[in-house]
Image 1 (cartoon, rainbow, N blue to C red):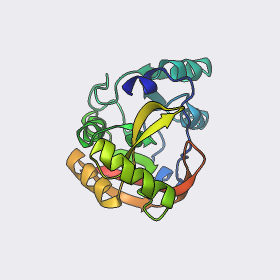
Image 2: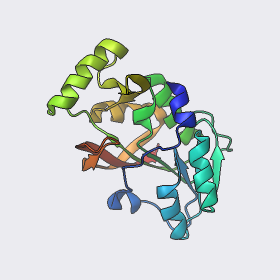
Image 3: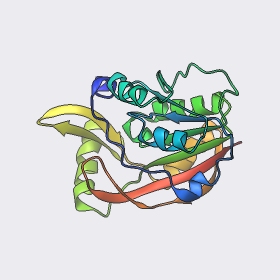
Length: 208
């Protein structure tokens, strides 16, 4: 399962940068796009003249970003090759949903805090228990993973990865443990990689 995100040649990016979250970015902020994929958001920010670097572990996607002239680094998001103070802001869009355990999610957030980011811009997917399709997936996922809100993503019968949808309280707890406090939280309707419309979350958080 872990290898899917290392080697897949198509990593969909369905979450944009919320305008109110983006407003917390200061001119000249050094931005790290964590889980940048092929660089859709990274490219948008670079074209605005912002100093931005992308990091991901997916080689094929990073190759696409490099062909576009974007600055990218291949690395594990829980072990970033940057010194404290290297960046002012970190972006994690549709990243934590792909991290399979609570401890691993906390490690990713804590690493963003370690490198000194004063601002975290995060977008992800919330629990959608009101939708029968996802309610069924959560029930099956609980039996398979042991964690509420997690479910196994398969394609043609093959296990691709474990996905996780959050509650707002769950995210707030992770942010607090990692050393961030929310500044702005929105719950927009967003599109998943499979095209379904669900409730997501877009937030800005400050380092404590």
